[in-house]
Image 1 (tube, rainbow, N blue to C red):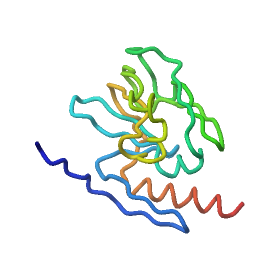
Image 2: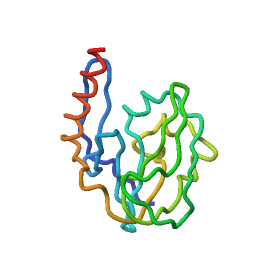
Image 3: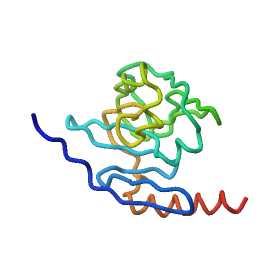
Length: 151
């Protein structure tokens, strides 16, 4: 059995919020992460910050069919938490490969393991050119937290 290495991460802390961002992932200013799969496709999930804003995840659904062509920004479905409900937009252009099957039996993975087993969907294609590396996303998150603190 091969031991699985943990990804190298950027530790992040601001106010009372702390997390770690895997360095090999890409991030969006809308608080999603994009991780490469071995087959060249991409897994997409919400960052820990996004899951905190959403609250405990209770439902996830998709409006697009398996193997459908999707575009950046296209609404793929929705995610509902105790605090809010939000549309899921594609952050990868290509072919929709479906939702995370593990979430059908354990939706709590979205909150328990947001940067790992709680991924939402997969797409084969090209990530949004506006994606950021972990350090760039940390700066976006700083600004987001500062805006929340100012209200």
